[in-house]
Structures are given as structure tokens and as C-alpha cells.
Length: 488
Ligand SMILES: *Cc1c(COP(=O)(O)O)cnc(C)c1O
Image (tube, rainbow, N blue to C red; front, side, top):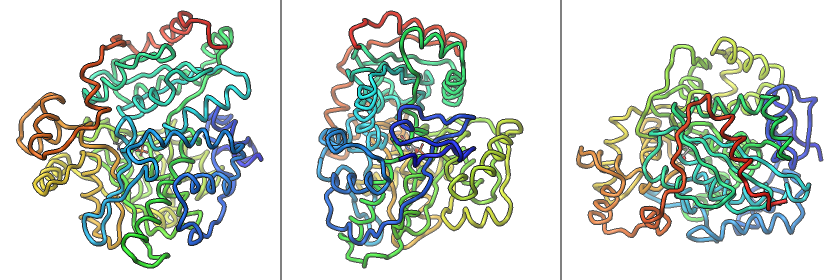
């Protein structure tokens, strides 16, 4: 089934397997769904998580044989509760927090990346191909990608992170990985620089040829990969169905979902779920002071030209070029408009929707942003009520307070333990290391730490190197040379 098309040229098409293995469509652009299936979700109310995944994969016509899909979905066995990997926690009668951080790396990236690695590796093996996965991270994608791909066959991973731009815990989650197929480097620059070098290498013919000589194909596990988006549709459906069940409001009740957003993968999952017929109300996009997404949704103008990236307390949302917006543009306005907008963004750092288009966008989305000081205030208020939230989630709580919707699900995208110094700063105004902050919180709140985080501080560090942008290409080729040639 060639049910994927290029966002900038819908005459280009491919199947799901190709969209996963080669996520960048020809002529620039991304692979996306050609047609969005309609589903009567009222018949899905009693499914378990795994069956729900299978149903959605079927409905999307993703054509995986049941043996592969089964083995891929076993990834959720590494979650705290494999029968409920994305549980809801009602903090008020009509407000639930959906905890998307119960995988090994304690951030929502695991929801998609835990199964994705297995999927990718099995598809690569099926085709007898070897892949280099290049990934750039602002902190959470890197750990989840490394965890997902470690020791898998036919895959080498190179992971770039902005040195000093992640929390200690995130850095340790990457630098202590010791599988021989994982290569981790700090970059002198911010996340956009790291993502930029990755995008330019994907287009670099000389680099591709050098890889080909080594018998490697190039791919990416970033949130542009539709293989990740597929899994991110599912937990939004799960969240809705659990909400209905627990709160006893009738099926069909519109529920808002509030999503702390950066590259827009999480929100895109909700958008597809809504398009497929899930009775979601508007999707509320929560931004931090890098408020390009909330400005875009409120004004129709996407303008990077006058902005520079700010370092905030919610670093996983410190993004200006939000990749998955392109798929929204395609789904709402088609390939020609998308091509025009993306061209304008590349050449003028700017594009603007017309009034009709803006209205269409706002039928699906609302948005607001939260200042850093406010973010700390919210963390403290919750802390005083013995509720621990991370700064990304705090942005979403702020959006909930601002737009005061009725029935709502707030997506919580990270466990507090990944951003403990910010939590402590909010509570005591003092600076501390991750380790000190975690210890203080455990004591104050009488909690247990996830063993996945606890173990980190005792592990040896395997990856120390920090690179200039100009050194990245040669370094990657070098580390593939030194890879023992045992994986065929
Ligand atoms: C990745 C991430 C986000 C942003 O998600 P997108 O899908 O890129 O919009 C928000 N919060 C946390 C903790 C994350 O790791």
C-alpha cells in the first residue's frame, strides 16, 4: 500500500516501511498520510493497549505482519505498568494529567521510541540493509533513541546533543550508554545547530557516498519519522478512552488536550487522532518563551527572522523550526501551499497564512505561552500540594489556567526527576546539582526514585567528546570505520 505521500509533492509516494527507513521525502519535505481513515472509536472502549495499537496500525494500513508488530509492541513491557503505559491521574474532577513518562528514560519520547527501535531494526533486517541513524537531541530524544537501539542488529547510532544544553540526568543517560553500536557527541552550539547539521548531512551527497562505500544507508529517528508519529496517535486515543471510563462522562464528550510542544510530534499525534474521529475538543498548544508556535496559532504568522533561541527552564521545547508543522500544513492546505510556505521559510525565515487558512487552523488548535518565572511559580504551587511536575508540564498547566477549559487532559511529558534542579529552584530559589536536588525532593516528599534514574549516577562515562559543527561529518565517518564488522 503506497499510502504515504510527500508533503511538498503528493505525486511522490511510498509505503510505511519505506517512510520509516527513509523518512525524508524526495524534493525536501516529509512523508505523511495520504488519507486519514475514519474510525468509530466508541467501539474501541474496552480494548487493552496492545490491541488498540494493533487496531490503529490496521486502520492506517501500515501492513506489518502480526509477528513483527507483536514483537515491536513488546517494548511496552519495559514500562512501569505494561497494561497501562500512559496512565491518567485525575487532579480535579474534570482535569486529568496523562503521564507519558513511565518508560525507561522518564520522558514521553519513550512512548514512541521504545517500540520504534525494534520496528526499525526488524525492517532493516528484512531488507538485509545496514543503517546509520543520525539523531540530534535537545535532551530527551537522545536518551530514548539510544535506549531503543542499543545492541540492535543492522544499526549504528550517532547522537548529537548541545553540550551544556541538557540536564545532568539527560547527559548521563547518553554518556553512560555502553553498547558498541552507539556513538554520542556533545556539540558546541544549541539544539537548532545540532538539528541543522543533521539536516545538511542528510542532503550531503559526498557524505552519502562515503557511507555507501562502508555499506551503510542513512536514516533518522527524529520526530519527523512517521514511525514515531504512529505510536503517538495511540496514547491520545487511550487517554480519551480512559478519561471517559474513569470520569463517567458519556462517550462523545469533547475533551481538550493540552500539550507542551516543541517539534510538534506529540501534538501531531493528537491532531491525527482528532481527524480520525476521536471526539477531542481543541488541541491546546502550550509554548515556553520561545513562543513561535503559540504566535503562529494565534496570528497565522510563522516568523523566525527576528527571533533568537532562548534557553528556558523547559529545554525540550527550546525550538524555533518546528518540523512537524509541515505535516499539519499538508493535511489542512495540501502540497502546493505547503511547498510555498516551506520555501518562504527557508529563504525569508517567514511565512504567513491567509485569513481563511488561519480560521481552519484554529478549528483544531488554540495556544498560549508561559514565562519562565510563572513556570517556577506553578511548580512550587503544585509542590506545596505534594504534586510533582516537571517544567514542561508546568507550561501546560499554565495554558490550562489561561484558557480554563472544562474537561481536559494535560499531557505530562517528563518525570520531575529529569529536571530536579529546576524544581528545587522553584521551591527554594537555590541552585543545586541534579543529585542534590533529587535527594532533597525524595526526602521532602517521601518518594521513591525510579531505579532507571538511580542507577545513572553510579555508571562510568563512556562518551566524553565535544565537537565543533565543522568536525561532525569526519568524526561520524571515522567512528563507522572503527566499528567492528561483526554485524552483517
Ligand atoms: C520532546 C519533548 C517535548 C516536545 O514534544 P514535541 O513532540 O517535540 O512537540 C515536550 N516536553 C518534553 C519533556 C519533551 O521531551
